[in-house]
Image (cartoon, rainbow, N blue to C red; front, side):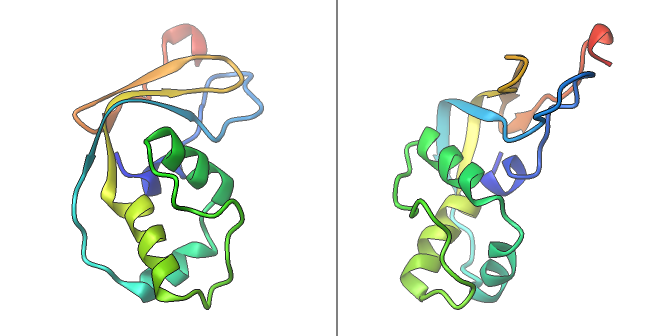
Length: 121
């Protein structure tokens, strides 16, 4: 699971108010090379919840992102770091944890299982 996907996932348990971000508990992280596209990255920069991306990247062992998001006209060295975190880091095994309820959603073979139990719907 890439961090671009993590940035969009929410906890949909009934009664949960703070639905995102989900905390990452990484057991296995792999890196998959992806073509660099600066135009796509500049477009995504405005759409990403930056703090969730930085926290997610750090929980997966990547600490190269700045605490605050730079502007859209960012330079190439920053965009390459953003690219690596957003698209090349993959959570292969671990969990996504709802910070409000503590519910863990397992991630196996890169696929998050976000199915809810009957009592959570």
